[in-house]
Image 1 (cartoon, rainbow, N blue to C red):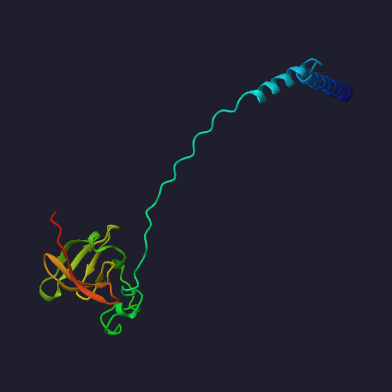
Image 2: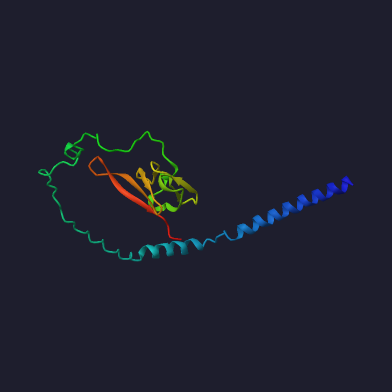
Length: 183
């Protein structure tokens, strides 16, 4: 049995070698050239070189810009101390050490008041955040991204005061409110 197997393996090797020789022979037929091919190639190359070059596109016209002379020597320097807060920064400002509350990560206009619990002075507002979680809000809590502190809770609205920059290095209090949604 092993003798038959050896003959088959030998026959397959010879067959593979013959196919390889035939394939390599076929590849070489297209590349062979005759002595007369070179002059035709040289004539074609000379003809291509003799043709005139195509005309070049004209260069684009450069746009002329109007010159401007900056003359601001007589104007107040925006980086001088004249723009700083006259109180020396002792006015209102957000507390950087205060722990942020969950609803301070959302803009005030994305929060919705959906109801209240309780009555009188113990009134608690229900506020739904954009993540669809409802939070209980009492006076003194913080809402929104501008350090908005809740000043009062009513049946139909939440009133708060936000701290916003005044543009001169200080802070201003701005009243805001969140109204109960009409469903």
